[in-house]
Amino acid sequence: MSQEDEIEDVLIRPLGSVLRMVGSSIAEAQRALDENSIATQKMIDLAIKSGEIDYDIQAPWYHLPDTVIELKISLSMTDKKEIDKNGKVRGYMPVMLAAPLNATYKNTYNYDVQGSSQLKAKIVSIPPATRISE
Image (cartoon, rainbow, N blue to C red):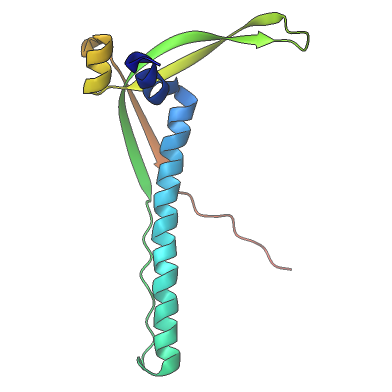
């Protein structure tokens, strides 16, 4: 496998995949914050129960209320073959590919950064739905 093929395998992904990975990373960071708060509260509860602490305190909770994402990427279109159960090509589905702009990509493909795209997205946390008890 050539260096160019390796770079393509690592960097170039369908745009939906890139956005999914970014969203998953943000969710992972929030989960880590939550797990830390839970662990802290458990330690506090244990200290209260054992008598080390004689007042009621609560662990702080942190959350990412909104996250602004700004990606500088190179976008390109390609076709993905759609094949029927008999192995015949049914048609072609357009797929948008995204590659992050960095020195490796720019130098490997001699890419002019003037032609780059900028994708801005905002992920906002919303309160969970409340359960109505009967």
